[in-house]
Structures are given as structure tokens and as C-alpha cells.
Figure 1 (cartoon, rainbow, N blue to C red):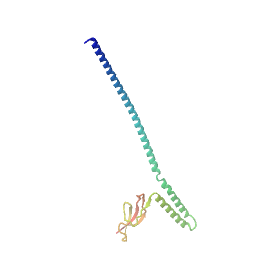
Figure 2: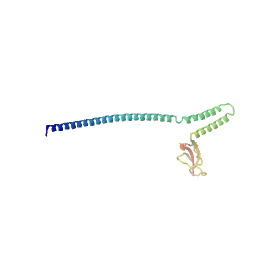
Figure 3: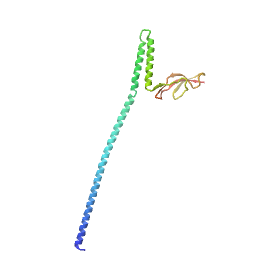
Length: 183
């Protein structure tokens, strides 16, 4: 092999080696860029996650405060409507304090008006009286206070209501206290 041929091969090897090094440097640079991009994207995702968690926590706190407020004042409308009933009861009681003979009639009228207004308020809010007299006893709706032997009614039939039971929108609000016939 001649020296010229050998130098030429050596020069080609150096060029290939240089190309290889350049290629390695480019690959390393690309890898570093990719890692840097991934690190930036990772940080961006972490920031977004932290913001989303903070937003979620704020929403949770607002909802809890709203629920507390709603439960605290849920019956405000109902209570406001009952104020008229209270006013009528006061008027009825004041009517008994007059010195003329019409006070009993005024009291009776006041109580009737109050009962009518109370019924209207109950109706507005879905509160209904249970009709018990003559119905069969049902432990889900009635509480037996007394059992009386009464052959004119079938056993287990409600013959007297001591305290009215009420429903609210189809659900029991208060059981009726009743007297039930026995054989």
C-alpha cells in the first residue's frame, strides 16, 4: 500500500469519524432538547393539576357554605307564612279582653279565620291531614294510645283520633294518635 493510498484511507476514516461524532453530538443535543421539552411539559401539567385541585377545593367550600345556608334558612318561607297565623291568634285573644258580650263571637270568628289561614299555609307547602276515623289501623301512620271494645266496629278500626296525623308531600310528618276498636 502506498503512502498516498494510506493517507487517503486515513483521511476518509477521519471524515467518517468526524461525521460519527457530529451525529452523536446531534443525537445528544436532540435528546437533551427532548428531555428539556418533557420537563417543561411535566412542570406545566403539574401547575395545571395544582390549579385544578385548588379550584376543586374552592368549589367544595362554596358548596358546603351554600348547603349550610340553605339548610339554615330552608323553612324561612314557611315560617313567614305562619306569622299571619300567629297574628290572627293574637287578635283572637285580644278580642276576649273586651267588656261587651260580643267578645265570644269575635273570638270564635278569629279562631275560624286562623284555622282557615293555617289550612291554606299547610296546603301551600304540601302538608295534609290524615283521615283516620273508620280506617284500619296501620302502624306506619298511626300510634295506638288506647284499645276499646266496640262491637259496632270491626277489630283494628280507628274509632277516635286524639291527635291528628299529618303528611308532607306524601311522606309522614307526624303519626296520628288513635283509639282502636277491639272485639
